[in-house]
Image 1 (cartoon, one colour):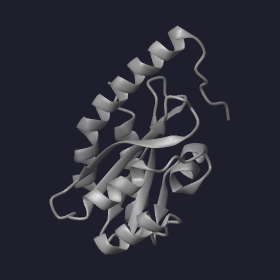
Image 2 (cartoon, rainbow, N blue to C red):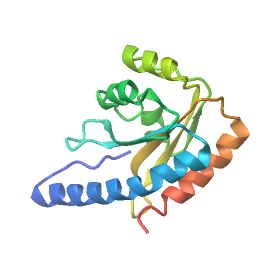
Image 3 (cartoon, helix red, strand yellow):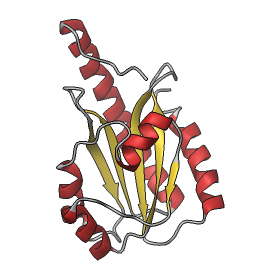
Length: 167
């Protein structure tokens, strides 16, 4: 898989415009998808400006998720390479993944997820405007165990909805 590498002023300007569009679209869709799936917290991940890894660029939580500060702080401290962790796997595979049991390697992330009562998650790709590359990855967290059949339906549904983010 080939990743976009910044080269020159035009590429940086395009990256900034694409990022602004992505952030604006995510802020509209992330709350809708979180509520639709019955999730309590969601993160949006995309390549950082240096293209060295995937970073959280936006989050959303419902009012029942009270451990937001610790969990979000731990997420924002992480940079994941493609292929690493659920976010990196979904980015590379370009398809959704159900996390039946949350298992984080980072101590702060693990402690805050257990303290928050998070049990499972769903990770889905967001396609770019052309529909040829992954622009972002959305990670949804649940306080209950997600049924695999329901996760498949949600993953397909969320992937289709995320394709409309640029419309």
